[in-house]
Length: 169
Image (tube, rainbow, N blue to C red):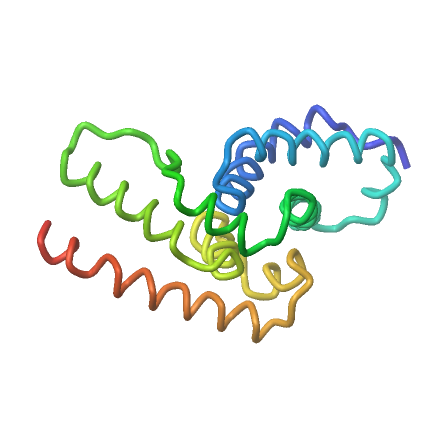
């Protein structure tokens, strides 16, 4: 099998991987480091892609593991989660509509308040459109765990955002 076309992989998947990792780390510089590590690993070991059927799922798994490894290197996951979740990150494109801008800010803050495990699954389900089976495979977790993390995360988002939604409506 010929070596993988890394330029094509990067072009097709980098923006989705960036959004996913940013939602996990809550830190842009760390996100860039994680993506660099993922593509460095693929450059050094192209055989990793040899029998991959789902490129996006495989890349999401590599990125998730790299992000977790990076967070562990910096200290405990909980300490980093609290630190990074408190930081405001620009997850959504700017908008001229003040109500939409307020909702996007609140949604970004609400996502940051979720435990990293729930935030990760919610992102993969809502923004990547992955099935629970794909999420479970990408994160190396049981299918039921993926589904329950999604449900708990959505419940927390609904509770947190309901007052704003009612106000805007």
